[in-house]
Length: 248
Image 1 (cartoon, rainbow, N blue to C red):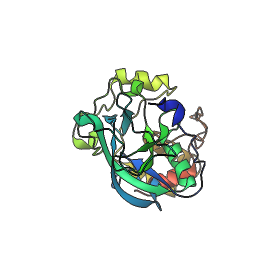
Image 2 (image 1 turned 90 degrees about the vertical axis):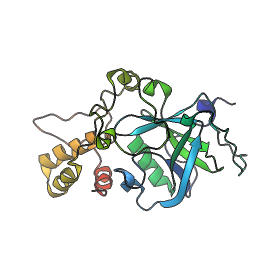
Image 3 (image 1 turned 60 degrees about the horizontal axis):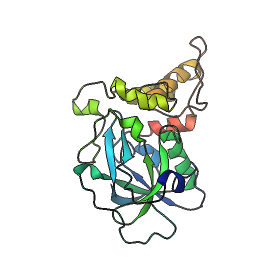
Image 4 (image 1 turned 180 degrees about the vertical axis):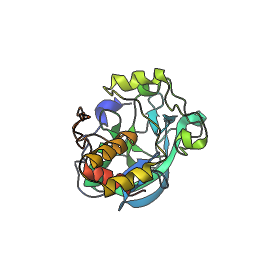
């Protein structure tokens, strides 16, 4: 097997024009809070990714390679399924496939925090389709529980479990990536905040927008930017906030 990180990691922007398939398995799924980012994308059906484990980070999941057994996409890949049959119940991730254009793919990269939080890699699903997949790294999930059946059903808070979605030990992986924050659960009043953001202006709009961006883990316009409390400024792109609020 070739070194996956060397041979199949791609830049955050697609190099070829036209529509490309992307496999989603978390908050981008239909019925979940970030599905609005796929507005206008063509639904290509459900799909399954083999050789991977899905981990529950609370507000969102993360897919990680299982013992180097990913089916790697290549220019000469055949149309027939080439994935190994997973040996454990954690070996398959269930999701949906969408056709997106280059601009949409770039938007998804910003949402997923490529390359600091996720990396985008081209892989082969169990049915032989080549797709882009957003993957995490093993060190990010060392102390996080896997999802046994590979199906993400939503934030743990909404499923009636404890509020703390990520254990303190799990922060070691986040901090290794230079992330100075801990993912927080999605607040139940996101709909209200979106309404406030749409109807406000000036400093108040910046405050509400920054709160929404932080809660939903959007990528800051300037990665290290912070806003002074006496004169708040917008840290997140207006287009990203508008896309987020479409779901509310």
